[in-house]
Image (cartoon, rainbow, N blue to C red; front, side, top):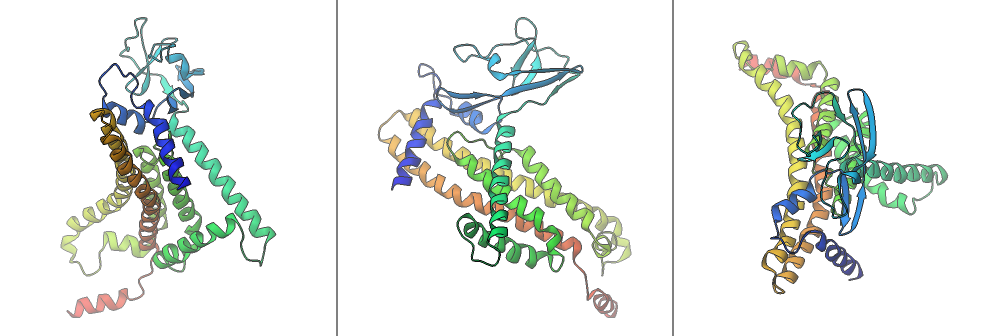
Length: 343
């Protein structure tokens, strides 16, 4: 009950930030987009804003300043030093604050909310697993304790039920990647559920890179049997090769594409549902709707805790399956060929 009270209190703490100006009509779409999209500021709650550094290279000239310069004392956006924010991006503007058409030579390396969240999650991962590694060195041959005892069953689960079962004898060389991607996704999913958290794994650019890593590892790990199955599928007549080869090559791309979209869509949808339920409070402005919305949103938040782990598991499992298909040795391929010829 204490944990539930803290969770509800945290939700109520962030509710005032949803309605920026009570005198204006509440726009749930703008509020939801603002909270799930990346930004140059990190707004934890009403009045609790972290202005992140802006790093620009404009025609070879490095410019670094705080994103707070883009806001006045009323938190209204304004141009600064010839730059302004336009649709979530920094562009060159004129004296009136209107965007200029020419954007060439302007490169943005700013620390946005998602980038800051990425740094936090990486530091958290390093802290947790360096601590676990030191515990294994100190307690060699002894029963695990503390944080070590919590993570050891999860690591063993990834090794035995995901890596071994889908990759086979060569699983050990892929364990560092599978463990990294599993805990990276899980930790960031959980951080995104915290009040004021960033929607990092709901950013399609992040899921794209994760899927691209799986694709590269799969392609460069592929053995001759893997490529033979693509360019000379066993049991398929040679005259079907012009059809089968493009289909197999497309299949190589669609597998990581499904990884990218699945993680992005599930995490983003969860955030949208929770924020939509809270929006009902401001849309109806009724005491009867408030408790009901909070109850459903709390239920969805607990459900998202399960989804956070589930999506990490699914991404890691499918990655292991794709890698396993690339390194698998077809021991009975010769028998299969004789059987097909006899048939």
